[in-house]
Image 1 (cartoon, rainbow, N blue to C red):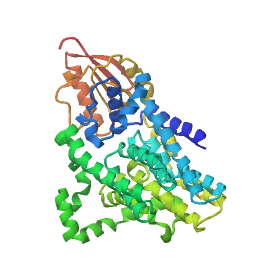
Image 2: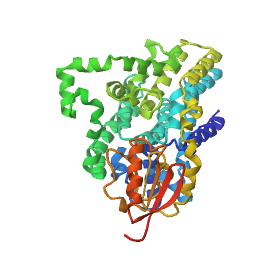
Image 3: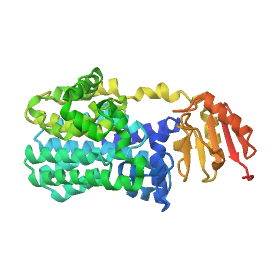
Image 4: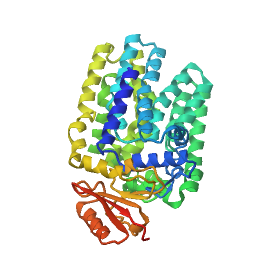
Amino acid sequence: MIVAIAPIFFASSSIRHALFQSSAWDLAIFDQAVYLISQNQSPFSSLMGFHILGDHAAFVLYPLALLYKIYPDVHWLLAVQALALALGALPTWYLSVEAGLKRSQAIAMAAVYLLYPLVFNINLFDFHPEVFALPGILAAVLAARLGAIRWFCVWMILVLSCKAVLALTVAAMGLWLLVFEKRRLCGAIALFSGIAWFIITTGVIIPFFGGELATIGRHLSRYQHLGNSFSEIVKNLLLQPGLFFKSLLSLANLEYLVLLLAPIIWGIYPKHLTPLIGAIPALAMNLLADESSQKNLVHQYSLPVLPFLLLAVISSLAARRGWLRPRGIIIWSLVAFLALAKYGYFGSIYLNSLDTWKGTRDAIAQIQTSGDVLTTHNIAPHLAQRSLIKFTNVNSPPTNLNKFEYILLNLRHPGWKSSREFAESLVNKLQANPNFKLNFQQNDVYLFRKTNRS
């Protein structure tokens, strides 16, 4: 299954990228960072305004740069992401066998993983280093159950290197292993390493590399309804618990939980929910957030929840609860995939810029230097391998156009945080600017290049 699914995942994300549906936030961010690392340059993100380690302390990006040393291409990121997500089926199968499931049931559980809509949808949505944590968490639990301490530590290091906030998931998983699985050594390692790494990353690494712009406080806007600072949120939690319950008990959260559970509801039983202790940090952050992207199966925020949902289902099946027939399990998973996976986008919203597709490709082909670029949010991932890449933002217009060598605009499809009016105003400014020359124009696609006058 893995051999068949990984190429499908890779083809899907590559086609989306080719259709100019990938985005500066996040594919261009990581492509630029990994490229700069491969060139032995500091991975300063011109899109975020600070060093890439100041974002989420994703050290896993550094070994990925070895692939860019072979040949720098954004498709490396899409390929390793597709492979990592597909490989999650392997530890799922082994965990099922280790729990005592029949071979046919273990194969069905691997299919449940691969058909879970979140896996396909995350693969489509640009690139995120935390995808490596999905097979990593499952493999770590398998190593703990097999008593393979060294391998457990290897998988823990991988998970922690993906994203700082995953340290909370690791700590919660450690508590579960320690108390409920009776894997005391592995549980203690995960619990203490998770807590320690979260303190180190948020208190030292992220502030050091990112400065004031990168503090984790920048994410507080998602929780402003609970308080304007971490201290105020903690204070409200203690003094006004009703505020939190009100936030949790919402229709949006109910819908989110239904989405999470629907694909595997047949295998969820109260007696076998202890693995979900590991999912509590991610689940709590998503439920408490005032941000719709954290309450769906499209974005990466629910990724740390999935391994523990699968473990709960495996536990139910091992106790002979839930649907025991593999055929019924696979059919239900297939129905859930057809209902919730976003494959339909390829016949709808992913085709919305086909009218300028050729013009955009021709314009990109004329950008033959590593000069600084200003372009749209959706074109940026195709031009991110340079020191300075920016995308047009109506809320933050460029103060100095002369610092760019190339400016590529699409008036019909101006991109996220832009508008046709804003793009037209930039075109008018550039046409009146003696330092720029119009190099290409076709179907409302404009490419300006800086002359040698400045």
